[in-house]
Length: 227
View 1 (cartoon, one colour):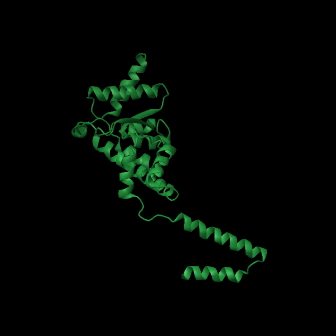
View 2: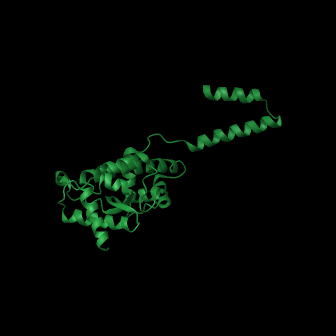
View 3: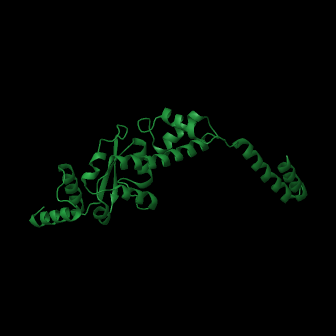
C-alpha cells in the first residue's frame, strides 16, 4: 500500500473511532478489514461459535456467511457490532471453550463504518444462542418426521447424515438428549393416517366406477367422524 493508501487508511481510522487511541489488537483488526475493503474483497467479521452453529449457518447462508437475505437475523447481528471503546473492555473476556469454531459474516462498507467491527463476549454468546434456538428447532422437527417411519436412533443418524452434522460437529448423544427434553410430545400415527388416506382414494375410485354410491361415502365419512 503506497503513501496515498496509508493516508486514506489513517483518515478512515480516525474518522471511524471516537477516540484516536486504540489497542494493538483493535488497530490490527481495523487494518486487516481496511485492506480487505481496499482490495475489493468482502468485509467479513469473525464470529466464534459452536461447531453445529457454524454448520447450520453455512448450510443456510453459504461461506462466508451472507445474512442479508434474513432481515431479522442480519439486523440482530449488526446490533451486536461495536467500535472500539474502553467502556466495553470489561466484557471482552475469552469466549467459552465450546465456541471452538470461527465463522465469517459478510457486512457492507456502510455497516462497517456505521456499526463497527468488534463483538463483545456478551454479544457473541447472545447471538450464538439465537442461532442455537433455530438449529435445535430444525433438528427436532426433522427427527420427529423421520421417527414416524423408523426408530429414534436411525432418525437421528439420518438427520446427521443428510445435513452434515457429523459426530464431531454435533454428537448423537447430544441430539438425543435435547430431543428427549424438548422434542414434540405427540407423534403422528403414520400407518393410521396412510390407511385412512388410501381408503378415501379407493372409495372415490369405486364411486367413479359406479361400484358404490356417493351416499355410502358420505355416510361412511360421517360415521368415522362420529366414532
